[in-house]
Image (cartoon, rainbow, N blue to C red):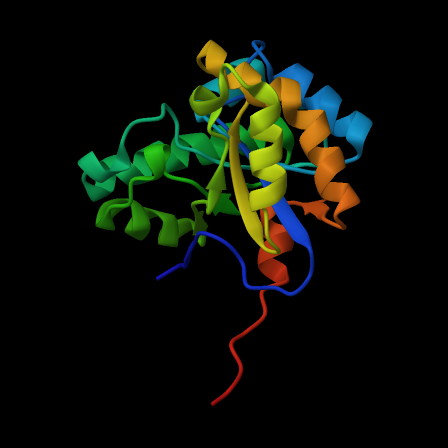
Length: 208
């Protein structure tokens, strides 16, 4: 069975910034511009049908990792194995076509785990990636600087940080504060890496 990962045990000050649900014209280009200006890499968990329609948005941003977030963002925990496999397979093909690279990791919509989706992920050799820290945009709608403080103060080595590059307007709280978050974390010594790069840094538990 492939692993389910919430964060990575490492002594290095590495953080994986992840964005779900794109690519979409709504905010994905803005996010890519911020990342380029701040020289930060990220992993985008793409919805397959969005990758098929909007792949041109990400075509030139090859420094990032592009991963599988299913074809149409259906709750995989409610699907049987064949349905879960098809949701991953269609997205895998669309993302590969859009980016020229096969996705290596996967995130289930809503973070819902199910036996069928884990079995399907194993067929692709995917690690299943969740998160240990997320943007809490709705909690900081009236205090956007507070979200920057929260992320800067809550990040630890090996953090996988959940964000979105499309969706309801409250997510703009995170996007508008993204550059400052990156600067604050870099000032603390953090380096932004892709999820696969972070997984490669995993420190095995010491032998007893």
